[in-house]
Image (tube, rainbow, N blue to C red):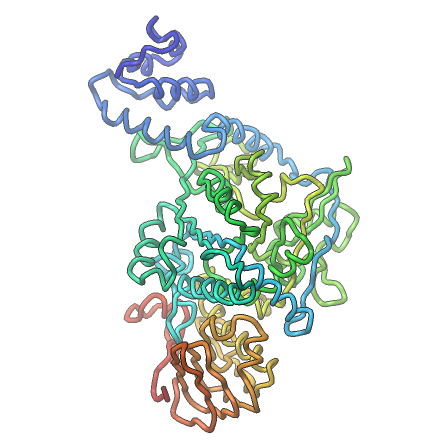
Length: 606
């Protein structure tokens, strides 16, 4: 359909500045003309400079507009907003502008929990009650390339004793919360807990395949919503001229925008209003490879409910200058204040510039007073919807161009705007109730994000955040939880895998339905039981009681719901041994190589 819009019938005067486009106007549909106008208004005429006469590459020209249409509709405010925001941020970046100018940091107020004490147990119970009014959002747009794994990160085994992947563990944990919550709020039990997964072009089809080929790991398919984030246009220079794809001059080069997109996707999907209408109160956001996260969720949700937090960031104690953002209260000279994650490389200079000569330093606890942000957020749904109505889910962005030299006039390669989901509080009014919940890192935080080479270079005493440390952290957490419940769990031995020195505890794992909260675990371990360091214990089922067990070897307990199984007596066998694997050994699977070990199943009692 040829265009006959505003001024076009008279030769498209508005396009005079761009002759190649003007010659091709007859090919364009009305909305494509409008998009062309936007691009020319924003100084993007270079996108058309190479366009040949009508009749040559017409299909490619149409495909170009298909892409522009997508880029325009997936960004709050459209492409014009994106280019204008980029121009401003690039100018600030060139000028070296400090985003925290005029702000003074101080330690915000929040809750610091002690695992297993009365307050913790009571908050866990409150959190389980609230869970049936919650929805969960998993941000899973990334592949495991940085880890040395070609697949999607959520398909990686969380631990290799059972081989359950992260996604299975997350779904089983949500289902266990759903079941426990329904029991506590009898009669008022809400429908199934909704679960949203944000994917990207890289992970979308693989995530759907993983769910479908495993029957959604026991969750009803109708509970799961997948929202795919689009990429954003790349920027070629400080004038925010959009970069053409080096391999296809009819295509704009694109890159990921960051996990902050989750807010605009939720807003435009209509899910938030739907949840509100069915009585939901909380939205919990989490990232793809923290295998300990669900240990923290019940008590943190309990904190949100008792403190009335609109925003609750889960946090762990952090060492000064550790490479993890710190949760900080910032007060501006004009009186406004906000509680926000400040990246570790910005926190130290910010403190030094505002009267703290030592910068980010440990206090008497041995940790920085600024708790470490672990990127798990609990938002109160009502205020969240009201805020998104104002912003349409747009999150404050940043740009990080790599300049060729100190003049900051040219980029080494194209850049793009980025956004992070934890920057959501930046636009909130000062009246918003923003807090945090700190838990021990051993209980709540063991992300898998570094490959073996990078992990081996981490300074001694700092966390590796690798597949090796992530798996060992699960065994440590489970061992410490059982110890707290009164069991005798042997001390770990220190060993080195893939160049990383780790504590090796007994390999203890259980299904979320067995030990969702500490009270469950305490109720199910009775009498004096002991587990040796070389042992493996797998508990699969709900009603399994451990009483007076002495384990030296491997024991797998599987039980159906209808039965109560009591595990007692002495179990001794050759067990499962840990075998070293070289991460360069291509005869092993990637998910084993990145750990540096595998379990040799010699003998077990099942």
